[in-house]
Amino acid sequence: MTDLPQGPASRRIDRAGLVIAFALAALAAVLVWDSRQLQTTTMYGMGPEAMPVVIAVGLGLLAIGNLIDALRGNLPPRESADPRAVWLILGGLALLIAIIGLGGGFILATSALFVTTSAAFGRRAILADSAIALVMTTLIYLAFDRLLTLSLPTGPLERLL
Image 1 (cartoon, rainbow, N blue to C red):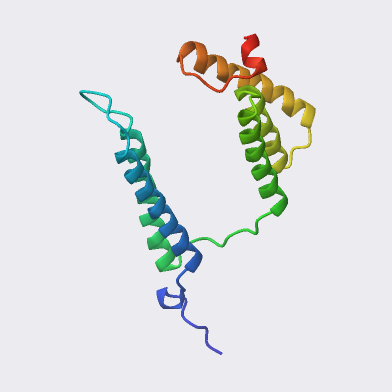
Image 2: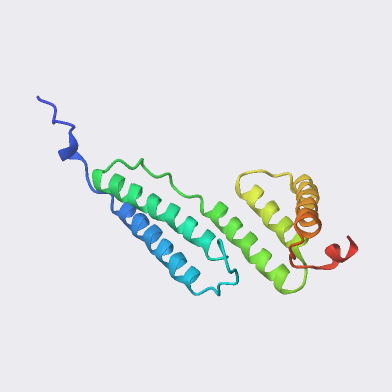
C-alpha cells in the first residue's frame, strides 16, 4: 500500500477562514467609511478620523493574511466553543450596557463585565474578583477623569470620588 502525497494539492480551502477574512475586510471598510463622516476639528495635523483608519489598515492586513492562509488551507483547526463562556461574556456586555444606561456609572458597569468575563474563563472566586474589579476600575476611572480629564459615565460611586 502506498501513501498518498501530502503536498499542497491535498489541502482544502478553509471556508470559515474565507468568511472571517471577508468579515474583517468589511469591518475595515466600515471603519474607513465611518471615519470619513467625522467632522474635522483641527486645522493642522491629525484629527479624530486618523485612529479609525489606522485600525482599519490593521484589520485589512489581518484580512489579507487570513485570506491567504484560508486559500492555502494553512489555518489551524478550530477548537469547539464553550457556549456557557460565550453566554457569560455576552451577559457581561449586556450588564455593562444596562448599568451605564440606568445611570450606574463606569465603575459598577465595568466591574460587572470583569466579573462575568473572569467567570467565563473558569474562575470561581466571585467575591475576590468583585473586589479586584472595583479597585481596578476605580483606579482606571480616576486616571481617565483626573489625569486625562476625559469624562466617563458617572454613577453613585463616581460622585463619591
